Image (cartoon, rainbow, N blue to C red):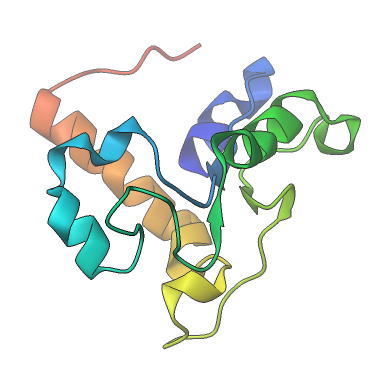
Length: 127
């Protein structure tokens, strides 16, 4: 959100997205037995977990974000399943989808930016 706010006047828009649960090479550091224990895969490595997507399905939201005319001129949004995510209720399990209210709060979004500037000593270029 904050990156979008910073770049909007220069025509730079930013979106965030969740591709979904996908078994990819990112799990290579996780022990195979742990993936089995979590119910993600069976002993042969076949995906058995509920709600898992294929890599192509996981890529769909990113492709939609990059190409959809419905999002032209939009920014600061959180996307999932080729749509703008709904705000999830407090206490709702993360697997139920949606985005937490704090994650789309403009003040909360500015905090990591300010912290990054403070920690790195960087000075943003202003016009």
